[in-house]
Image (cartoon, rainbow, N blue to C red; front, side):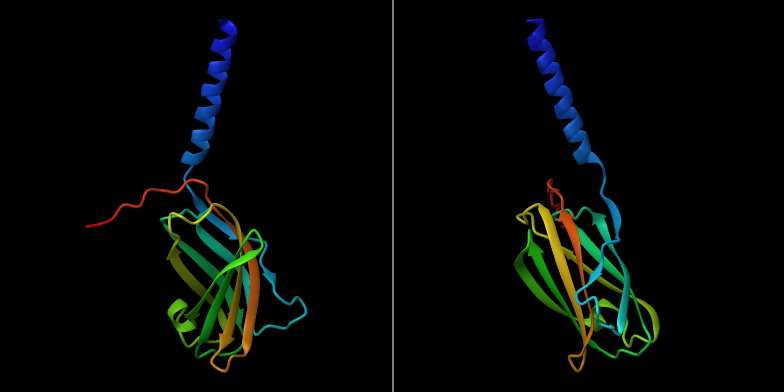
Length: 162
């Protein structure tokens, strides 16, 4: 009898500990594993980092990807192409107007590209990789980077504002 109480206590402590892990609030993450698509290319736009908030990404909550970059030239417009893979399988592509993701024209120096969106509740949790390509108005590739991110295993409840 005492043995079964001990097993129940251990199971209860394990449950409390695992629930406590999911209650830790998400934070932002500075991605240090940003890699260029072509390591030998001399891209016009240099990327110094990516900040993802919240991290890990939580379904039904707005997530912001901020890309810190710099350039020596002026960029008057272009497209931001995002390709997403889930465990190595391509699942999604989207294209955005660069001037809606940053202030245009981009002059020489440091600038930031910020993209926000809400992943639906049915988004599978796990490991994702993102490829971001930036092209100018003449379709010349300015930069191309890859980085990984995670989608949390616990989806938050979406609360609709009336």
